[in-house]
Image (cartoon, rainbow, N blue to C red):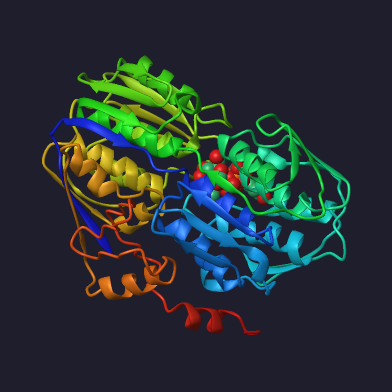
Length: 477
Ligand code: UD1
C-alpha cells in the first residue's frame, strides 16, 4: 500500500503539463492491435491502468513495448489467443476493449467482466447487446463473457446511456465487419473522437465521431500508423481544482480548453480568474470559492470524473452548493472521508448538498477510488495541518507522476510505500514493457528517464502473481 502525507496551506506556483489522456490511450492501444502492422503511439501516460492494458495485449500475443523516446509500439500481427489473460483483463474497465478487438480480429473472445474504479455497479450489457446485433453469439457464465461470430455484419445499434465504453467497443468490433454499422445515441466524448481519428489513420472508415450518430463502414484490413494521444482533460481539470483550493497561480499546459468548457465555466462561477489560451489554462486561486450548482452529464456536460475534486472545492465555498451525479449515482462512497476533514455534506440519493466551511482540517483518510483520491489530495492541500491518505496507489491508475508534479508546484506532499520491498518487483514488471535501451531508475522518486516521469510506482500490478491468479481463477487454464 502507498501512503501520501500532505501538509496544507501552501499556495501553488508555476507550470504543470497534463499528460496524455488515460481513457484515450486505453482505447487506442487496443485499436492499434487490430492491425497486422506496427502502430506507434505518442503521449501514452505511464500509469498503472495503461500498463495493465499493455500487459493484457502482450498476454494475447501482441508485441508491445515502450521505446526510449516514450512512444508505445504495438504490433497485433502475433495475436494468437482469444482468451484474455484473466489477471490483466479483470484489472481495468478499459480491459473490456479486448472483447471488441478479439471479435473483430479472431471472431472469438473469452474474457472476464472488467474491473475499474469502485464507483458502483458497472454492467456491460450495452456492449454485449451491440455484439449480438453485429451477429455474435454471446454467453455470460460465471462472470466470464464468451462471444463468437463466424462473420460480423454491420447493423443499426442504439447505444444505451450513450456509453463511452460500449461506443468504443462497438467501433472496434464493427471496424472490419461486412457492411455499415450505425451507432445511434453514441458517446461524444473527445476520447471517442481521438480513437476514431486514430482508427481512420489505420484505414478504418468511421464518420460522425463527436456527434451522437457514428457510421462505421467495415474495411477488409487495418494498417499500421502513428498517432499522438490527446491531453488528459480530467488531469488538467484536477490541477485547476487543486490550484483553486490551495491558492496561488498555476499554468496548466498541454491542455485543450475546448474539452474543459464546463469545469472552466464552473470555476469562473465560483469566482476564480482564468486565462485561456489554445493549449493552456492559467488559474489564480486567491479567494474562498462561491457556491455552485453542478450536475454531471454526458460530454459536453460536466464530467463525472471531475465531480469528486469539485466536491472538495465546494466543501470550502462561502455558502451552500448542490452537486448531482447522474452518470454513476453511487459515486459518493468516498464522502465520509471528506467529512473526516471537516466537510459538511448531506447526501440525498444521487445528490450532495454541501454547506461550505471556511477551512478543512487534516485527517487520516482513505482513497476509495481514483478520482476520490484526487479529491482528497485537493482537499488536503487546502486544509489546516497534516493529512494522511491511505490506499494512495489508486492514484497511479490515472495520474502520471502526481506527487512529483504537485511537489514541483510547491505542494507539501510526500509519498511512501507501506509494504517493503516493492521496488524490485515493480522493476521486474516495468522491464517487461519497456525496451532494453530505456533506462529504468527506481530510486526514491520512482522516476523513469527517457522523458517519462512516473513520480509514483505501479503498485497494484504486482500485488498478486499474475500466472498464479490466472491459473486459480480460470479452470480451463
Ligand atoms: C468511461 C470512462 C470513465 C468515465 C465514464 C463516463 C474509460 C476507461 N472510463 O467509463 O472514466 O467516468 O466513461 O464518462 O474510458 N452502463 C450500463 N451498461 C453498459 C455500459 C454502461 O448500464 O453496458 C452504464 C454505467 O453503469 C454508467 C453509464 O452507463 O451508469 C455510463 O457508463 P459508460 O459511459 O459506459 O462509462 P465507462 O465506459 O465505463
